[in-house]
Image (tube, rainbow, N blue to C red; front, side, top):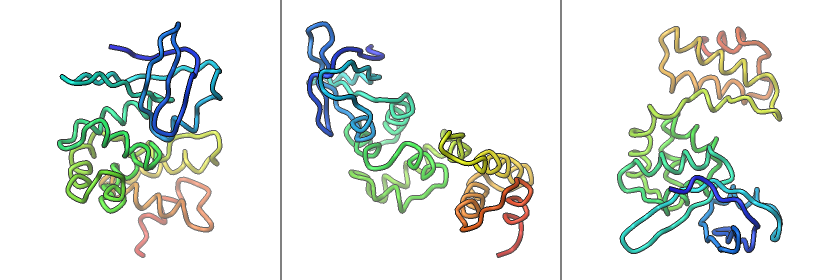
Length: 196
């Protein structure tokens, strides 16, 4: 099994790349997020790889991040989703957004992904919901304010108080996206517990 390929980027398009590794050109199918992260042609490039072998084909899929590759593999555990559909799903939405949709069981948004209908979206939401950490929706990101840490803490507190993780994440997300979001964890929890 191939874990990654490191070489010179020979050719790139939004759907695939050719990576020259010691004189051998490897063609890899890629999601759009990976395409955006690629260096210019002729420059060094390293891609994480998922090696898909069938009777009639040997297909390599390349990813810029482990998060993309892991979600790609996870999606294929759902019946009716193969590698091409999983790649389309990851291309249609960022990894973070896709994980959030799964954690919140947002079937409506999942069904808008390429190659994913309503039934498949429902299967994704049901089969993968317990395999996705809803707190990743508020993962620390250097570009974000300290609000994300407070949101994670608020979700944990709400689940400790008996709310489902799905309900806690939805409530905290709505509060954090308000025009004037609260500054402390306590304020977020109070707003989440208050009747609307």
